[in-house]
Length: 186
Image (cartoon, rainbow, N blue to C red; front, side, top):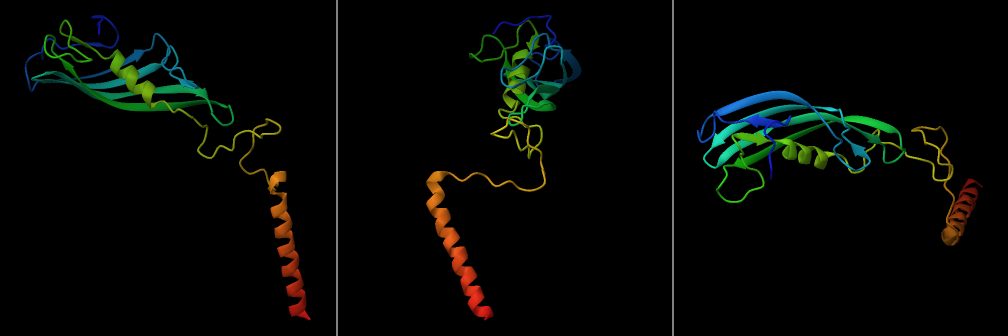
């Protein structure tokens, strides 16, 4: 993993490198230079990510833990309405010292680059099937119009012709119940 020493997600750790027990906390914002995500919701280019990060020196490297907050935009997976919602993730990763065993993240030039860590945490937490509201009714399959939550009278769904024989049985039961009720009344 190559690191940039001057990127917006790069934090200096020179003062705590190889000093187990030392800790630093950072709060900062980063404006994204590109969009994150490829699904029906993404974190757009130019969106701000708020980071609250703790850097702790341990024997193996620098333990990075924190939270990232931002907003994602996209469309509802049911009714195709535009949506914007907050996303908040927690992350924790060990940035190992170079030269030790091979790891995904390393301390490079007395800096840690959090971009890959934060991007992966946010993108993996984006909803796969986002909805504008938990009980979104979606679109009408016949007209393609957006269904409303309470449209008044319930409309009966058309019956599949393969099940019409069962409807005849239930109709006969209804007639038999009606005849039995008539006999009791007389």
